[in-house]
Image 1 (tube, rainbow, N blue to C red):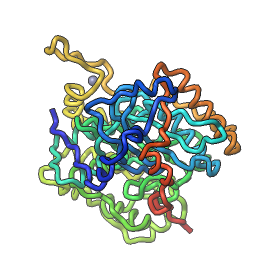
Image 2 (cartoon, rainbow, N blue to C red; image 1 turned 90 degrees about the vertical axis):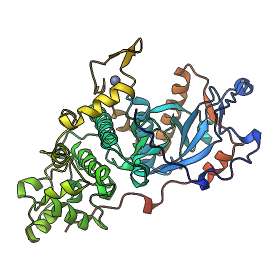
Image 3 (tube, rainbow, N blue to C red; image 1 turned 180 degrees about the vertical axis):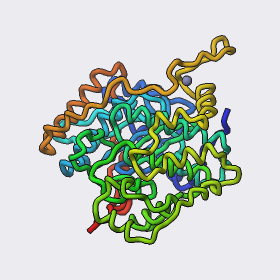
Image 4 (spheres, rainbow, N blue to C red; image 1 turned 180 degrees about the horizontal axis):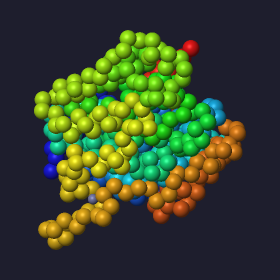
Length: 436
Ligand SMILES: [Zn+2]
């Protein structure tokens, strides 16, 4: 078994919650009053507390009153401010309910909202994950070669599933890769995710991907891009896992491109075929640079050549020639990560009578269906999205065999949630450079 990698919580996060009055302890309660008195008080249950802030929401660790288990509760506030934000949240909720994969975070439950008139915010329950790859990388905890292999394997396994369901994540970064105490990793935060655009003439937004992990075609103003933007991000994270330093840590999109070409060398024109003219001219008028990819051997002592080879294929300038998830998973470098994951961490393999391992016949499954985003096409007003989202959640709760849950307005968490807002502009990815 891998050594647990969970970071300790700050004392600040824990402070102030032990004095909460018993009546206000439960952030979520059964929506039906008759079940209120059957609320479970598990001895293992921990007090509700905040655990993180994503791009578009606030996350708390809370107790599920039905079984006493600790789960994560995400609040999506101010959902209905404008059409863009309400459609984005609707898409994210639909995606969270669609996903069925061990390395992709999915919704365990949706809290029943009040009446349509009072419907302002959305609460989603997901599995509770204790840490994320960013916290682990910046912590002093040792990261062995085995850890890196098993993390990389799970990132690619989850991403293969996402891409097979036709979804581009568009913000793969260490903070969006949640990790639990058994080193199981799940991709999260689908606030910027969308369905891949098949029509290459259709423009796609460039307001995506945290700058350090942003692919060169995005930095160079490409109007159309593919799953390859996610694979670039994985290449940056792979290098960061080895060196425990951000690979391309620039202050601006222009400098970002500068650092990338310092490592890869000046790309030729055919490698920049998706770039806008202004960006292409910028590169071609700069002094010519030669590749210094051999520097990847200096990421940490004893970097295996298979690792350098795989990073190089992920950090390929031309997105058409960049390695795909499925191809990356077939590399020998990931064999040990696969074996370790399926020997003691997965939910698809098991050992019979505690002896022989019975392995699944599909180690890296794809999605059974593609994610269907056709529901978005005819949404033209905030009130329309609001009504559809309200009935989507109500129907979801009618279908489930569990007692539906709702927020407890008396709880300490609710009071804190009420004052929380969406991420401020400085927390969002920086805007792309405006090429002439
Ligand atoms: Zn398995």
